[in-house]
View: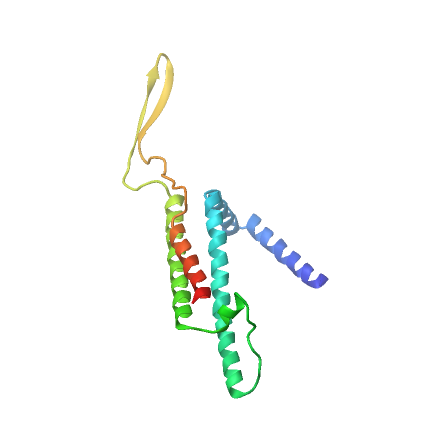
Length: 181
């Protein structure tokens, strides 16, 4: 137990050393800080829901592999194990074509949702639009110097919900329909 804690501690020290004393580590740390500073609270909610759906989707796929192995074992007479019955477990016990279709649709919608969210995040990381020029006007009014910027990129438009959230809701609905199918 203490050896594993010691190994983790050494890995943390190596990571900290690499991050603090190498140019690549410094650049990586600054890049992560830059990206994390631009995530909104709703982006974090979106990420949590997307990760939960991905875990649930993977567990359902593993469950069906287990169901196939159990079915083959029962048909060969190697086991008499029966999948437990219940409101949720009973629905996951047998594989139907409808469940497979909803499972595949949930995975496809999840992937589209995450790609759309990543594209919107990348647009938010570089808010300046190409091809727009700045005009700097400087001068003196009543003995005071001033500099004024006109043109250039406007303040980035923000939407209240993350891009891809509606598609993620549809993916959750497709995943919930697995239990009904």
